[in-house]
Amino acid sequence: MSELSSLAEARAAAMKSPCTRRLGLAALLVATLGLAGGCTNLPSASPFKGTEMSSTPLLGKFVWRDLVTENPDAVKPFYAALFGWEFEEGRALGAPYTLVKSGGQYIAGISKTRRPQPDQPVSQWLSFMSVADVDRAAEQTRAAGGSVVAGPLDLPNIGRGAVVLDPDGAPLGLLRSSLGDPADTPTPAFNRFLWTEHLSRDPQASADFYAALVGFEVRKSDFGGKPYWVLVKGRERAGLLRNPIAVDRPIWLAYVRVADPAASAARAAQLGGRVLLAPRSDLRNGTLALIADPTGAVLALQKWPL
Image 1 (tube, rainbow, N blue to C red):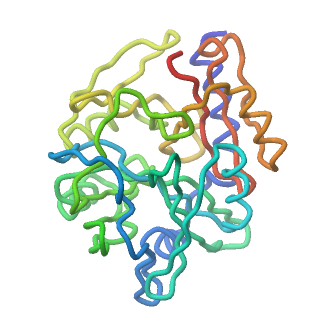
Image 2: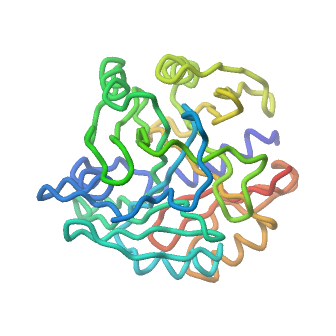
């Protein structure tokens, strides 16, 4: 079996997970930008405090992640034990928000949401991409056939942001930080975010959309006998491939760098998560695993270098 076929099998399991069903608009509004009741669900201090920042915007880089979950209390001990992450609790205008720290650096946030319908679990990792102008990018997304779910609006101590569904239907955060973007590093540290991959109905069309949105160079290559697209701006920023599950919507899948994906996946299961794909020799030489946390949010675990 080719690597891509094996990976498609794993992603099929991910797409069947409750967290990858279509997110309700109300849930995204409440969880990601906290618009319910006029609240802004953000920390009182900048999440980039203490982080080395680039002197110029790194457009196209994924600069932040939010875990949108129904049960933050269930996932915090899970991620603390799995990755050694630490948490800093805060409130803004009465709304709780948790900052996630790794090695003393803020890397993500956790927001609580609720199901728009009883049968619609919504827990999911949402990735935010750096863009030059959030309002313009949101309008470009709408004009290309996507939709704007939340914002654009000003984010205290951060900049301006929005959440959209791209023309292919994948949820995405847009961000223009007033402080600049976290500087690139040669390789992310262990237990931090490593890569982001778009599972698309039409990867060429998605690649063309993001090239127009951000100015990416698109490099098409062969992966496991099938096409794979890489978005490049300054360096490789993300990958795209055809979604193996045609009946479910596309997603942006986040990868975390780990030293031993087999051990990390086994540990995830012990902590109350699920292993959607255990490492296998015919898939990237056993360097990849796919897990879901206790609330169903999916992450890829990747050893790097391969």
